[in-house]
Length: 242
Image 1 (cartoon, rainbow, N blue to C red):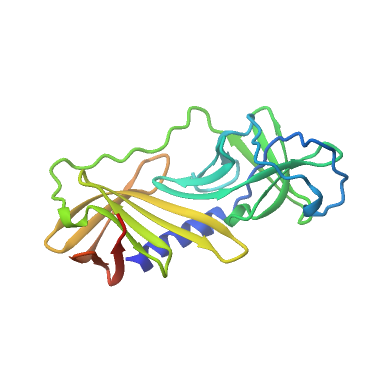
Image 2 (image 1 turned 135 degrees about the vertical axis):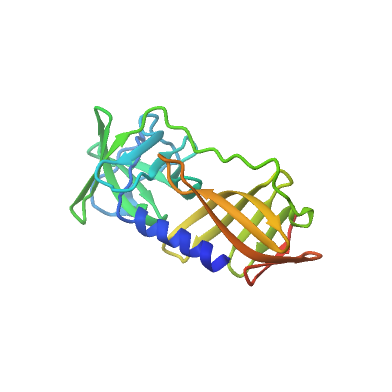
């Protein structure tokens, strides 16, 4: 299962990698000269209120949404699948707004301008420009569990695999969360997939939402077994941590 879920996360990463992202507005305590050197910008954990919210690539074929949070996180959201990374903001001596993240597709330093509900992102060194429209009245997708679904009580709790840095959390009311942390020294981000689930004679069916617009549900069934504090799901081992 871990392999299948990792493939899903990787596929989404490839989709998201076709897009750029956006930055925030910060007023450093002292001006910094423009040198093109990332290290000479006074990066801050202070987001621009104008950028907090949801944005969608004007040219992307998919309907993934980019979310900027007041906590200086940036999230790529596709249905009930989320990738999240930290983001920092800065401004150079010429007043050009910049942002930097080590997370996934947003990797690197870029500048931005917001005008008339359009976010224009520029990667100066690469000469690439991307535009995003503000998404008004954005609300996250909502999963609803089946009240009649059978839930194996032995699954309830959190299970982790330290080698793969991933985990499952199952609740008694039929909800599940898969989390994986990624950091190879260059890219660093967290991924999360929210599910509803049901169990049946050693099989577990996990259902997630695959897009933001049509709210299409996708279900997959895998074999699992629980022996005390050990969980095997689709051939991968997890240990109870909560």
